[in-house]
Image 1 (cartoon, rainbow, N blue to C red):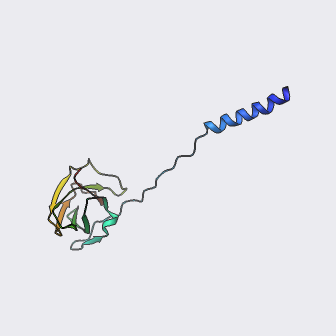
Image 2: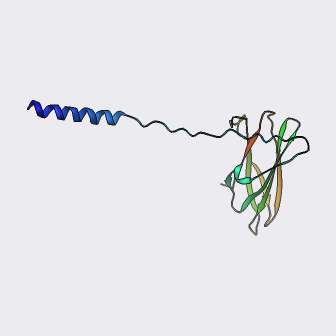
Image 3: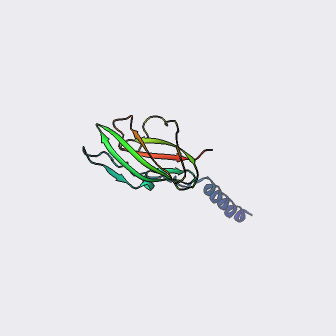
Length: 142
């Protein structure tokens, strides 16, 4: 009887220890922000897919440029409405420091109305002199 209890006890302890072990947490390693400041008179052309977050119906971001205005980052985004009728896009920018951390609070959503097949250019200047990168968030009407 004693020989039966020992394997049963060992198996129970092994099962309990397996249930209490937790897998190691997985961490998302974010690449540091890219410094988009330019030299005076230079413009940096950026691939929109690398800086645009979200989508807005048939409105596409087809161009992004940055230029440094004094110590502040200025962003120019070109939007295009691929649909044959008027559409509205909501957008805001998140300004990032050199570590990729968002500076300040979320800005309120701004709106841009584009007629069918129309293009529009929106510009924004960082309110933070130490902002080196950005994300352009876009969405359609809820």
